[in-house]
Image 1 (cartoon, rainbow, N blue to C red):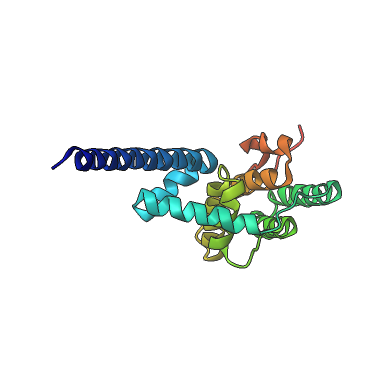
Image 2 (image 1 turned 180 degrees about the vertical axis):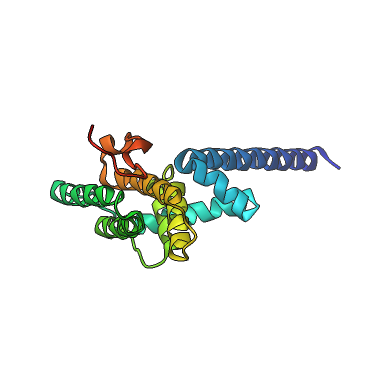
Length: 196
């Protein structure tokens, strides 16, 4: 081989190496961005799909889908109305835990719908919520699972209390109610409090 041919091969090898390194850096940066955006939902999706690349593609697809939706914040009036409704549901928990959980689930659906999230299919709803609220979407899944067990008569009062706590975390996030998001589990007693 002559020198020009060797030089050309050398340049092509260097270009290929730089291309591979660039692609690897791009993938690493993309993975880090998705991990930061989705938090625990990233790891959950990786476990669920069994493949990091497939999980990342799914998360990107979710992000693009939600970008096409018209997600809007609640007005002050809507926030006040929904918060009042939530406080009513929370108060009814002591006397009717089963009914309160059902109402909480319905109220969250109303809030999501008002914000612009499609609410017809639970799995799609959780995927959509995971884009903007990845730190509380697992609470929603857990609460919904308890609500399904409740519908079959398989949930204890303590399970229902946990569902309310999980629902409240998502409700606080969706309504931007910071005070509610720091409330404690004691706010859902399993029996009536008696005045001394």
